[in-house]
Image (cartoon, rainbow over all chains, first blue to last red; front, side, top):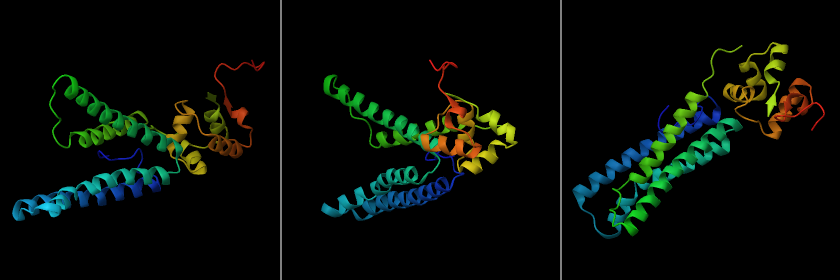
Length: 143
Length: 70
């Protein structure tokens, strides 16, 4: 199970989710490298620069839509609950990191976080929570 | 909430996987309900009760409930 894995790839919704994640992340990789190469070689300005700068953000935002779609399609309420719990862990880590950093910047002259820390932390926390829950819910031999 | 799901399942000779197929849920879900890690929603509880031909309260019981119902 990868960082973006849902609690079970065994259900129909879980398989669809895995497929959508693969497609979305493939698009992300293409856009990240494409944008980096384009900006480096063609040095665009104005709206074109903004366009290429924002392009790789689209699949990352789309990932939230992919998760939402999974929650909508998953018929197994227990697996749905596990995924919601993991999303809550990811959100807590993300909001917690941002708010702590913002208060440090506001009151203690703290520095800004490096770019991309927020969403990377969110997905790592989400993936870790999914992994922990998968391990905790392992089912042994059937009787 | 406690439940008698494991006992009822054993009585009819179904495995967790068999029950999961009949309920259209994952085996993880059946296991989580049996071990008390997860309390099913009312629709799923009704589905379980219907499958075993029993009332919900014959399968699921509130924690600490006594026979006198107090």
